[in-house]
Length: 204
Image (cartoon, rainbow, N blue to C red; front, side):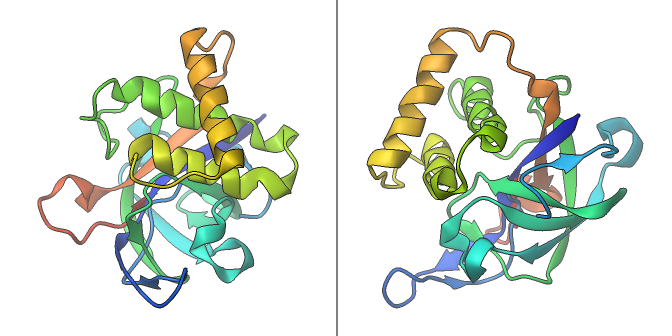
């Protein structure tokens, strides 16, 4: 069984020239070698906090979205992650300390956006989108990630494809997510994301 990562990305991105932004520091994604990563994965009880390293962006650009490639304590091979935080970025090669929680079993108490209204449903919408990646053509991955970014930050603009994924996730939420294996989704959140400083890495 393959498990998937949703994460918070990094430090605040500074506006640059054109579409490209200068990335100030690093990421807490949402997610490397393949579209998901396989067991074993460290659990909340056994390893928090963990060390996470951003290995690469797809195509070298953070705006391409999923999959971000990560290295993580307790996992031998690189893993794929989807970033859930549009405003915080990072650079490949940077490492940070994070907490990891299982969306199906651990709740979202350690997740960055846990205080948003109806936050658990928002995380489940994002997790549902992430779980569709193995059965979705890769040319839709950017739209999928933009939909996730918009879920947690409505200021993120959506194209038609991303809007379609957002609508699909909201429709799934209205049905109550029947049979969705949220225990296959993990959230990686930098330990500094709950501090009042802006120096927070990306969440996945």
